[in-house]
Image 1 (cartoon, rainbow, N blue to C red):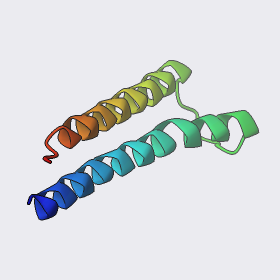
Image 2 (cartoon, one colour; image 1 turned 60 degrees about the vertical axis):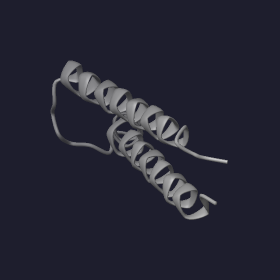
Image 3 (cartoon, helix red, strand yellow; image 1 turned 45 degrees about the vertical axis):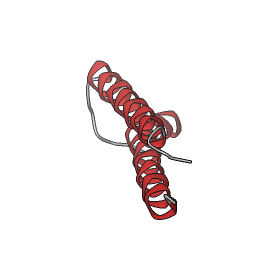
Image 4 (cartoon, helix red, strand yellow; image 1 turned 30 degrees about the vertical axis):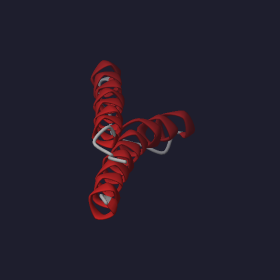
Length: 76
């Protein structure tokens, strides 16, 4: 009977995945949309912006994979 532990494990994995989704949305999609639609008046070096966006995608992917690893702790 590991029902409570399994639910806590699923909750932790879902939280990590939500954090990953938010990081990718805020760090990659929002700046990309602002750049494409001309909504940003901030003059930032494009290489720096690209590096930061790719860094956010990388960290987001890492958080997602960490969430998947947490799910391996589920018990029958």
